[in-house]
Image 1 (tube, rainbow, N blue to C red):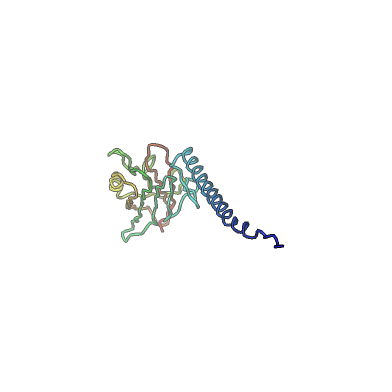
Image 2 (tube, one colour; image 1 turned 90 degrees about the vertical axis):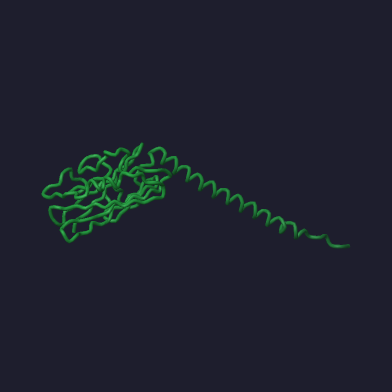
Length: 202
């Protein structure tokens, strides 16, 4: 009598099929998780607007300003960087404000009106003033913005997607070592937070 054949091959043949099915299910689960996280992030941005600052260090708010060389990052991928002030031989200082448009549309860093100037105080696309960010008024020191109108003119042309623009600011302080604040408030049809930078004129 011949011994009964033992079914040794059937489970082995089913194993690759089972493993493939599990791998496909795991990949689908990971893809759904990533898609869900992205959708939740987009939903959250849609609720509070794309003009929120999105920082990993200092927030860029008036109470927690950014430092020299730092970049303010907005949720819609607009990035604004303020350089460290550079002393000149005539006692003045220069710094740059660089706008990088990573958004999907055209931006107007200086507003859409040709008379939207850059003011020393008050709401404006770009403000450079003496004092710390929380100071309402500087006490004991001041500065003069030497090329205010040129800076305003440089901000006026539209800035297309994936384009960059650098605006030079020249100032003359009342003395060395004083703190200054740069406020960047790019105009938008909706809401956009003002980014505050606090610098020292060494």
